[in-house]
Length: 190
Length: 195
Image (tube, helix red, strand yellow):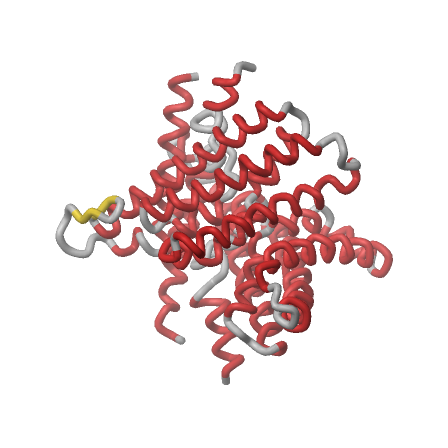
């Protein structure tokens, strides 16, 4: 039951993009086509889950154990950066098809604040290892869901007749605002 | 380019938030009030200036291949400093900004300026660039926070001038996106007129 609450709350109620504003840069920058946003969501899911597991173990057995929790930010970002590199190298060898599909999205993930954000949040919320994994997976799904819905909306936006100054990014923000408003409707369920 | 131009470009022509669309996560996340926006902006400015300074000093010592990880370590050190100082001296603001303080590390503006400017320019211009970009970012956050605070709770910098609750939606998540959208339209218009 506890895990179901984590899942529903991360995907709908506290959606990482629309309620917590983590990972907005790729949200605005990448999501103009449904296909590329699915690729991005896949890559983020992959890195987010692995990063959360590694940082959880590091926090518990290294940072807390030696009383150097103030090194958290530096350690986590280095772990994520090297993890992204590692995932890139492994994928290239093991599954060239997947590597091709994710393409340029992999290196971009280092600076995606959603990954670092979820890693830090999982530690702050004091989940156990399984809880952290569930938390990371459901946040990744929430990220992907918002990204794909938004990309679908933006594909239609290209053809809409709106004032010239609003075209492009401004209207995208306003649509994102309306989407966030829609997601607020989930607020009562947990 | 004169130093004044170097400094002032961060405010309108190359404003990180309104024109380049960088650093959007803290922009949207913390600007529930003008004060939070200003605090976040100044913290980022400090990190930006210091990392620009250090990067421009050590740029010739860093091998090209490991430059990005090196920059990230430099930035992360300054972020940790800001985090500890804020926790000690302004705990209330620290609690409000919360998660977004450590997330300055992955703010694209900081790494972007280190890579695009400080690694190619002199120490003095890099400091000026960091200061201009950082204050431009702080300005954007304060404006956004101010508008949301006025509409959402009828106050500015904590001074209440309208009785009652205001439109709560502007303090909540959707308001951030919508206000930022309209502000970008406005800045585009101003930039077009002065160009």
